[in-house]
Amino acid sequence: MAAGDRASIGGLVTVYLVLLALLAASLGLTYLELGIFNPIGNLGIAVLQAGLIMAVFMGLRWSSPLVRVVAIGGIFFLSFLVVLLLADYLTRGLA
Amino acid sequence: MASANVEVPFEHFESLEQQHDAARMGIWLFLVTETLLFGAIFTAFGLYHHLYPGAFSPASRGLAWELEAANTVVLLTSGLTMALTDHYAFELRRRKVIVTLALTILLGLTFLVLKGVEYRGDYLAGSVPFLAGGWHYTGQDPSHAALFFNFYFLLTGLHASHMVIGIVLLTILLGRAFLWWSPFGVRRMIVGVGIFWAFIDVAWLFIYSSLYLIDRSGGT
Image (cartoon, rainbow over all chains, first blue to last red; front, side, top):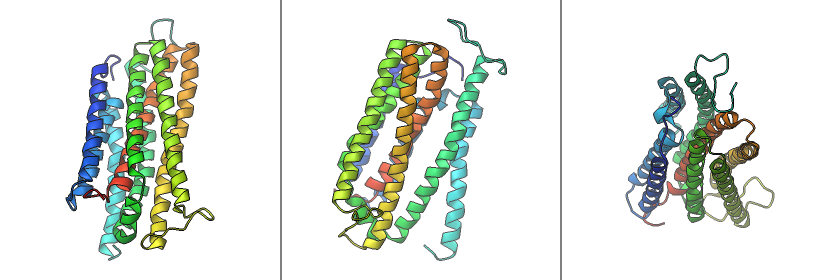
């Protein structure tokens, strides 16, 4: 990350307002009857919010590719955990 | 070492850029382990939610989601003030760093106080399965609802403990910013603590979505 590369104050405030708008959208979703799309919507919005925070507040947008790889590595390892656990549960009739 | 106005990299780094990258990578490597810690609990929660929806859904709908919506706003605001701290620290603006750090600490403490209010309500409602006299749940399937509340306290408690650690680190930073003996040292520490604080925000957003909101639809 080059020393001068970072979000402007206006950029940070904009991201903050978008995060609040997404929270409002997530809360608004709970008033609708959408079946399976209720939890998908709520979690999808959380993923979007997390992505924005990681990119801007945590500075990944301006970080070097190596730092980004390490950060995304966490999600990658977590996906191993989830996939292997589900492979066990779903194939042994436990769930 | 740093002279008064220009930051010079430590001797084992080739450049300042490399030093900054190494600091960021270190904190991210730590956060990878944190992701796996929270992620494993979320995965177990998701699985049990799937196994016992009749107990988990009503228990989830009984949580104080309005209070925690306010708390989410508090936490997101603290995320902004922390990002502003990082911004001002880069420009070495001591006074603004102090103000934004103090605001972040204040918002963090507000979050913990509201969390305490919620826990008190849970205790009075008899929804604390691991406390003697704290469990007299009257909803559906109490034995599996107890499992839900154990997950709830584990996730929110783990998150709150991270908040406490974050607030301690921020208070140390506030002291260092007051003294301003090593502006570049303060700036380096703010980058790491700032990323950690933002991670606490991210963890909370998933906790709020999966514990409080996931079972709500049609306004119930």
